[in-house]
Image (cartoon, rainbow, N blue to C red; front, top):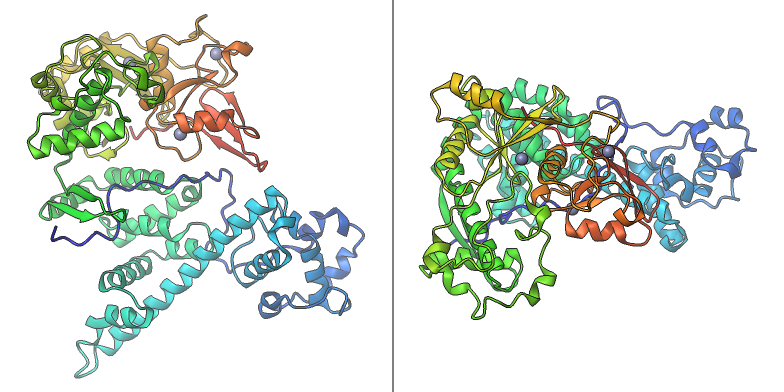
Length: 596
Ligand SMILES: [Zn+2]
Ligand SMILES: [Zn+2]
Ligand SMILES: [Zn+2]
C-alpha cells in the first residue's frame, strides 16, 4: 500500500445530470450582455403598465449597483438604476423560471446579485421551476468564477515566464505551482493540475470563453483540455469550436466519449502515440477508500486485455447469480475479481444450496435469466439453472463483448474507430484485435450487425448465427455481410411493422430498439441498453403497443423515476423520449448516434 490515493480515483462515474436540450449558445467572443429591457418587462405580467420606451431611455445600472442590490424599491423610484432593478426584482420568481430573463442570463455580477437577492428573500417563496432556474444560474456563476480563476493563473504564469528571460531569473518559472500552492493552500499535485488546466485553456481560448460565459462548467472544460491534448493547437481549437455548441447538452461522461471519438477520427495516429506513451506508466494501484476499505486497480492497461478481463469477470458473476449466489451484480463482480487475483477458485462463491432463488426479487435488471436482457451486447448466456457449472467451468468462462465496428474497419479498408458498449470509443487496431479474439472465443452465441444512416443513427439490424471469416479476405467478409437478413427501423413515423401482440418484444425487435437507443433513455444516463429493461412508454395494460415506437430501454432507477408522482414520459417519435420532471421542465433524448 505504498501508493497515495490518486486525485481522481478510478473508475469515473459521471454524475447524473439533466441534459439541457435547446440551450441557446451565446456568442462566445462577445462580452456578457444584460438582458434587453423589453424582454424583461414582457416576461412579467405585473409590469405590463410600465413605460417601456421611457425605461429603455434610462441608463442601465452599473455592475457595482447591481451587485449591491441594497436599495429599497420605494426609495428612489426616479432613479434609472432603481427602476430597472425594481422591474427585475419584482419578477425574480418569473425571471428564474423556464424561459425567464434570468434563466439564461450570462453569468457575472448582475446574475450573482439576483441570486443573492433570491437567497435573501428566502428560497421558500420560489416556485419549483424558479428554484431549478436558480440552480442553473448557480452552475453558470461557478463556471464563470472558475474561468476568472484560471485566467488569473495563466496571467501569473505569463509574468513568470517573461521574468525568466531576465539575467539570473531563469529558474523563476519552474516554481509557479509552488507559488500557487502557498497562496491557495494546495497540495503540490493539486497546484500542478491547476496550472496545467490554466495552460491548457490558454491554448484553447474558445473553451475558456465558453467557461466564462457559463456555457460549460470547469469539469467539462477539463475534459476538453484532456481529450484534445493529443492534437496540435490549430486542430484542437478547430475541434473545440465545432464541439462547444453541443457540450452543454452532454454529461461529462458523454462529452468525454464524444470528444475521444472525434479525436480518433481526426488523428488516429496521435491517439495511438499517446496510448503507447502512457502504456509505459502501466501499473497496479492500491489505496485506502474514504470508508477504510481498500481499492485495487490496474492502470494504463492494454485495452483489448482489460476489456476481455472485465467481461470475463461479468460472465463469471452472472453465472454465479444464475446459480443462486446472493448479492447484486456489482457485489458478485467484486467478489470474483478478488477471488481470481488472490488465487481462489471463484466456484467457491457458489451458495451451499443452489436451488434457493428467493433473493432474486432484488436483483438488478440485467439479469441474464430475464428475456429482455438479451440485447446486442448481452453476454452469451452462461450455465443456466440446473447446468452443472463446476468450479473449473466457472473459471473457464470467457465473457463476451458488444463491439460496434464500421464495416470498413472490419474489412480493413479504413481506420475508423469502433466502440464497445459502456467503455467508449476504441481505435481501429484494438477493435480488430478484439473482433479476432471474439471470433476465436467459444462463448459467442451470435453476431449482431447494426447498419447506420449517414447521420450516425441506427438504420437496420441483423442477427447472424456464425461470425465472419477471418481477416485477410475482404471479399469473403463482404459476401458474408450481404448474406445477412436485415430488419429496418422506420425513420420518423412508425408503420408498426414490427408490432407484436404479446407483452415481450421478439429478440430481433429488442436488438433493434437497443441499437436505436444504446443506453437508458433518461437524460444523461449511460447505463448500456443491454443492462436495461425495455419499457412500454404507454403501459401495455393501458393499450400501449409492443412496437419499437412504444418501447425504450430504461434502467431500473429511471424506470422507477418514470413511475414516481410528478414525472411524465412520452415518445413523440420512435427513439425520441421527452421527460417532464416534477418541477415542470421537459428534457428530450434523441436516438443514439454511432461513430461510423
Ligand atoms: Zn441482434
Ligand atoms: Zn409502432
Ligand atoms: Zn437510467
